[in-house]
Length: 451
Ligand code: AMP
Image (cartoon, rainbow, N blue to C red; front, side, top):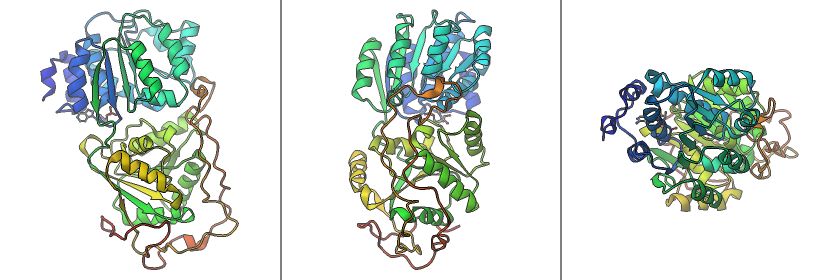
């Protein structure tokens, strides 16, 4: 299939060429004609499938014809980063249309948003909290809305945005086209979809299976040896850019600092950062200034970093869905990537859940030359597993003044900050590999050669 078969408006077709897309991805092949027909769509797709262009292209096609200066398309997304990313896609794909788009989210000055809205925009990409503020203040007019997109609906639900969404939906013109995208379908999203979609067409791509181009491996290790093993892995793996996930923002921050000390260009992305610093970390990771980005799930979800060669789960995620989301960051758009997960003896049940979900058993690997027998230092809880945190259930702080939304209710882990180094863990290339630690792993060679 080729893009020209869609008969997109010539100015939009030019955007496809400018973006360098030649063949539509499966979700695009399914969704674009359906959206162009004006049908409501329920899209089951995770990031990395090309879903943004799947809704952006037909929306641009529609908006390129007709009235200007009024908000005709509204895209609601859970995080500021995702909102910026979606907006970037509209800008790239729609450059020739001269349609105007505005991002609307909290944590930044409201005035530039008001000015841009006043100047006239056809497309608004918003996070729910700040959007509600604009609606309450009368600084946005949505009475001419034609298309509504809810992107990453399950994430919005996880982040406690459902009540805000319902408030927004009540105030939107009922006669409109609605597209709902979600990687998973929890019952609340299913109910919401039934309420707001009219005779929807379901398009579904890879919501359970991760991208086929990703190689998965588990690295059984004891909690206190995770950082030395990570350093060893990085030393012996041919990586381009690496996204590392931790369970808490505290661990993300600390691990980022440890990697920097070890000589890596690393940044961490977590909810405590100001919006400017978050954006700087993201931009730096995208442009290669930082080779490594350490992030929590909430901080990183939905972020499109097409060049990620490796995803490393320093902490195993809490759900199989989160695992799929995390590793969806690598192997995107037909590139290949590796996903490494460090697992401790406590993670056995979650490993089984993930294996069941993926319908495959994951390879266990042992790092050759790494001493798995180094005992845990006494009285040092630096590497203690933090308690599992519930997902935020209150309205996140993106609309709050200066609020750092992602992970709003995350608490720092119970682990104490690092106090002094344990020299035996630095370097860690002490003895030949032994099959030890979390148990059950079988020895295997590193797939890639040392650099
Ligand atoms: P998304 O799932 O929307 O986050 O897109 C994932 C990545 O795939 C982004 O970097 C897009 O620019 C890229 N992409 C989307 N559609 C195509 C396409 N048809 N061909 C190649 N790359 C694409």
